[in-house]
Each structure stands twice: as C-alpha cells, then as structure tokens.
Amino acid sequence: MNLIASMNSKHLSVFIALLLMVGLTSCFNNDLTDPNAGQAALNDQQIKDYLTANQLQDKVTLSPSGLYYLISGVSASGKAATPANELEFTYTLSYIDPTTKKAVLVDSANATKSAYIPFLSGVVVQGLEEGFLLLKEGQTGRFFMPSSIGFGNDTRKDKMPAYSAVIFDVKLIRSRTEEQQIDDYVTIKNLSAPIDTANSIRVYRITPGTGSTIAAGNTVTVAYTANSLRGTTPFDKSDSLTFVAGSGQYIEGFSMGVTKLKVGDKALLVFPSLRGYGVQGSYDQSKGYYVVPPYTPLAFEITVKSVKK
Image (cartoon, rainbow, N blue to C red; front, side):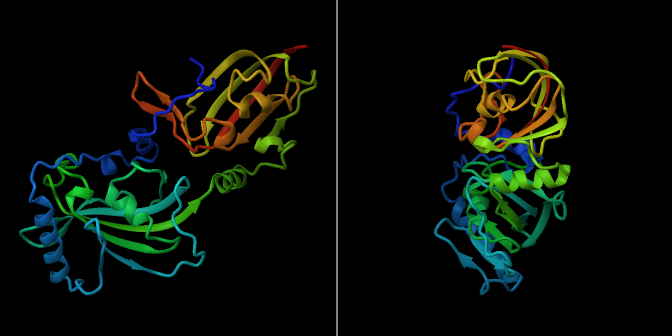
C-alpha cells in the first residue's frame, strides 16, 4: 500500500503511536480509570508529606487540577511550549513512596538525552501536559502530580505501585515550529540552496538528470523513500511508482514537488504538514496507530525514472 495517497482520516483522539517515535511509550501511556474515590485526597497527602520532608512546601504552587509545581531557571528566548510545535526536553520520572516519603526513580533514560514529542493534546499524561504549558525554553520544572492526572492504576511495568503520586523533573530545551524543524533538518543534512520553494515545498537537487522536464499532467515513474525529519526508517517506499503529476492523487508535497524535476534527477523534497498529512496525520485503522502523526513535516528522496508527456 502506498501511504503517500491523500487521506481524510479524522482520528485525533488516540495518540499512542506518537510516543513510539521518541521511545516514551514506557513512560507516558496513561490509564486514568480510578475506582477509588478517595485516591486523589490520599495522593495529595502523600505529595504534601514529601514536600514537607524536603522543605519544599513553601516553594511550590498548587494548580486547580491538583498539580504542585516548582519552576526554576531563566529563559533566554522567552518562548513558551506551544501546542502543535515539536518539544525537545529531558526528564526523569519518580514516584513517591508513601512509607519512606522518598522519591523512587522509575525512568532516567532521558535524564541528559533529549526526547522529542509533537505537543498535542493526549500525547502525554494530563499533569505533564499542564506542566509543559508552564515552561519556557531553558527552564526546568518539577511537577508533583496525583494519579488522577498521572498514570492512574498503571504500574509502569511493575516499576511502581498502582495509583502512585509521581514526580516529573523536566527541562524544556526547545519548542519548534515546523519551519524551524525544516531549517534544522537542512542544516544537519548540509543541503545546498533549493532549486525551488514554491508552495512551501523545498526542492533540493542532489544529482542532476539529463532527461525531459516534468509538467502537471505528465505520467511519471519514480523511485522514492518517505520519512519524517527525525525518522531513521522510511514509513513508505517504492522502487517504481507510476502516477500522473499534479493530479491530486497523492499528497501535494510529493505530487507538486515532482513537477520541478526532470528525468534522471535524484532529489529531496522537504515540506510542512500543510503539504503532507496536515492536522489529521495518516492513521492506520488495521494497526491502530499513526504512521505519520499530525503536524509532521516530511522528506521524500526521489529518483525520476521516466516521463510520458
């Protein structure tokens, strides 16, 4: 199946697949079912006991949701975590042991190594989502959250008790727009100036061809690989795809970008989600996850094999 076909999927509520992109499934998947009506009050007391034991009770702020937080550091950019941006951050996750009143480390894999997520509703647990909105680039947050806005009865693969009060220590490094993500990708790949940028589709000719030029309405055969800017494995590829250029059969970044090439060209097409899968992403119903998450800029490496006028 060619995933570059235009899609109209409206699946925006379930976002587990996004976590797989950055290795955070083991940390942020959430089940908030809580049959214990008194659990919130119990968690709140556990957090208060921890704060008192560590002389933090006068330093934190309490939000209406039950989140206690402490923000430190000065933001040089002043830029806040912005919905639909990609967030780069580091974090550790601990739970509060109610007996010892101490924090027990659960996850430190990204204590110094950056993690990345598209910042959309439901990607992370409610308490961390709220916490991100309190941060600006360069700042560090310590977030104490009851299970009702944390992990509910999830034990994090038996690393902590169900209905635990948890602590996230998070540093927000960057909140990047799609255009900034593309600029960074171009810098990392050391790409030369694009040969065309119309319609926000950047066309980079890697190896020039000598054959016929392509126009909308021509029948074109190409080989391609499709990837997200941070992806290491293509989400789609073909050694020989034949289609009508500019017909609307496929996503605009691919179909329109090809019209800037000629036979024999090896090129890279880089474009924002507006020309890709947009706000809906590409959702695989049979597998139950997003192949391409919403608001994801893409890069297509293409070799033009032939064209028929």
